[in-house]
Length: 409
Image 1 (cartoon, rainbow, N blue to C red):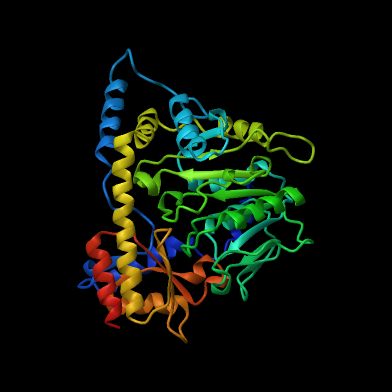
Image 2 (image 1 turned 180 degrees about the vertical axis):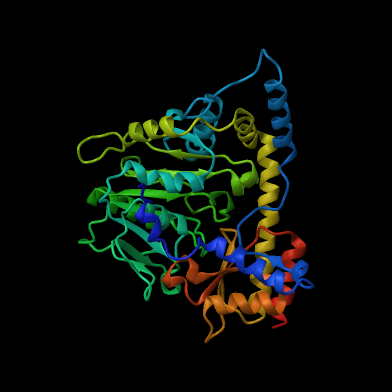
């Protein structure tokens, strides 16, 4: 008789955003007259349409697929050279970061890569995560059997090194203790959920730590396009020694609106080798080729268009639109007496909930009283309790309406 994977049974409750969707659906069923009033600033999904230059590239690629002379079948497992070369030049070399085209692995999105990257590491690798943290980092390692046992009282896994990110520390983590024996460190900057950014000296300290202790940093840079401070690093490869210890993951979802189109990439430098000299680049290439048939040609052509002069201008306009939403929410709620963080170098705002309330209680209050949806901070980890995430990815009207309603409480 077959048996299910017991590691999946260890996962506590539903995936965070599935739970939010379930609560919204239940509220709508019980209050059909108010269901249409709900303003959703919880899930980080974009609302602006694809830029015209990207749509044109999609149409042109579709036409190619309809012509026998230009039709494309399976895409190269690791991505088309035209996109990999463009990424290496525009995202890295232009900033003084050395990344070669054959170190770029094109995929269907950063979320998949964040979950799948753990497969090329040993089953006993000890992971370290920021707290609060994007749930996929931890949950994917739970599924792999790497996290030990779960303590429902604390919300912590026994074999995970948690790095609390508090307001006192600017919502950035401290380096693990020397005896932590960490193999795999997950960092996300600009950060989801807190909206915090990291300065280059701080990031360099992480690179130095990883090289000294033989650890690998998985650097999620999905929101780097939202950095407004010219002094902040956009890539971990801007730091000395990062090629020996870091993997960087990026997405087209938030910088170019590809949440429904699906495109991302991961950089694994050839310099990254384990203690035995085994190339992690080669392992990821094998994993990629075995389990993935490549992102669609038409989508990769659309990705290439993002880097064109016109595409860059159009996507920067969209980013400015979302960051204006962030300003409206941040300043509006601050004027109402709320303590608000983020929203300057990231499209997320991290709100301190009123005293005496849990983050889920605040979620219910907003939904039931003013029909505004955000994300409870506790869903991102124990240190997220007492906070609430709002996104700037809605329309201008939804941002302004959400502020008006929350201020009315």
